[in-house]
Image (tube, rainbow, N blue to C red; front, side):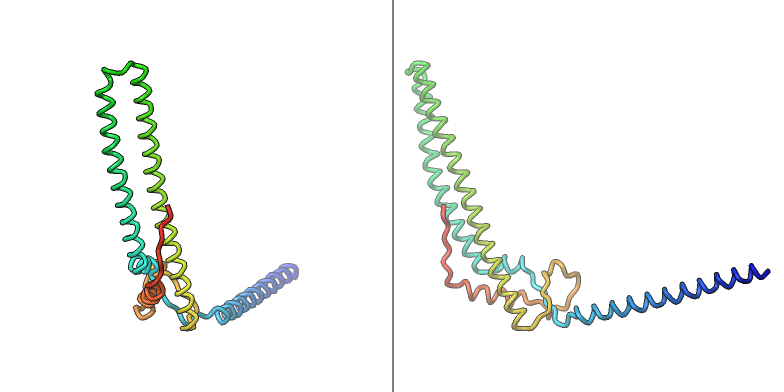
Length: 196
């Protein structure tokens, strides 16, 4: 009987000790959590729609207009060259009966080489235009990020998040229009060039 009572007493002491330790652990975790919250308190937050900034910026409009102009130039150039190639092809077809088989094949091979060369040039110019547009967009995006950082500094914002990452927010937290306005102001006299 004494053995059972002693065992029961040991078990009870272990249970009490376990509860004491677990409650201490929970209390210390709560203190650590509140300490972290104090260190990482966010008082001032803003939201920016960077996609809208890039889409609505006047610099983007100017880049698109310049690219459209360049695209039209090279399409006109290639339309002229295409008409020339069509004439050469007609001439080749009319020479088929006049030229020897070997001479005809040589002219056809030369024509095909010229067509392939022009196709490569078209592809190169399209890629150059796409690359130029992407580089211009990257520069506009970087400038927009600088402006966001400046606004965050001047308004003493703790964090600025992209609108796509925010599920719900108050509209007065949105700084998108401020960013667009400042971006337009900074880029109004910027020269845009496309290198081919």
